[in-house]
Image (cartoon, rainbow, N blue to C red; front, top):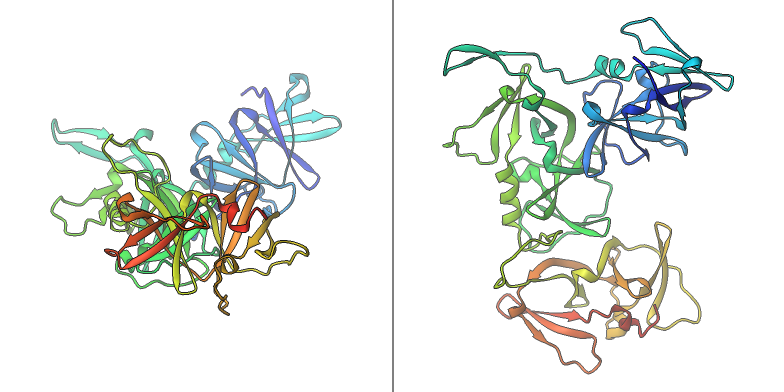
Length: 458
């Protein structure tokens, strides 16, 4: 095997080379979700470019001390071709090197981790046989199975690569379930702020902000009839279907597996449980396959609070719904257009600023960005209640972001324009009154020019 170019990575003072033909991207270390019962070398799963990849510790592949994943120089390297579902966690990436064939020594070895030595500027670089190393620890190995073709009674082998699919295996209520990786967008830990939604169905935990996108989180355990088990192993799976995004809370991520069609026993069409598409046979265990119709059912059941995250094609006569975030100030309900809302966070201490408008409470620091906090209570003449569970709604404004303290966030709704009446208030703060519950519930919708709420103080 002739090596033309390598990427050099370092562990302490030792340099290793990886064939550049295998390298995809070099990234800063993202959040990695650990996997239970996985091989020692597998660090977990992470989202890269809209897909889920398995992260291997390059150091552990070589029998070295593990990479912390926390160092300033630590990187994740994605791989190409047949290994595109994998990524490497490394201590440090130094440089890409075109090989002078006069300075490389190919080792006459087979089934070894090191296949060549490159002499470069007084340093010896050990070139690794990545395919061999990964082959030693692949947790999923589907053996060939002989099956009978009933049409002609001939024996055929069903183990082609196209016959296999990847699944995320997870636990709920002590049982194992699987979801096709293609239906997953990413996996999150539960140390995030989730805002409850008043009046939602039992399985709805609430709403969270995910990179300026509001995502409803459902407890998949409740939907499947299990009592939720709260632990630090709980995870939120982000799925995307029909132009909508939904978070699904589960007990624990187990592993990522590759199964062939022969491993899957589909349920008969007469099965009462539409939540299960089939059963996967994995050695001596049975894994229930979550059906797409179950997720679709969750989306449809909660369609009034789940926001579309893409623009779908609609017919000319379709009604364009208005999406709003409804919140409480005092005893009244108000709303912002969803397009104006960047995120919703828990209350946090603010820094007062001297010589500013009385409508400005101060500023806060959100991930290094300074955000002005305005007072809707003062603007509307409402007394601020003394409670610790206030929320801050961060809104887009022409000159940056503006945050507002609110008592609670009630709902995220798609409102039919027929439910809205234009508001003719003299101060121009509101654009419409939303009539809900057959007019028994009135919600004032703020004007889209958010900056006017502070009289230009932002």
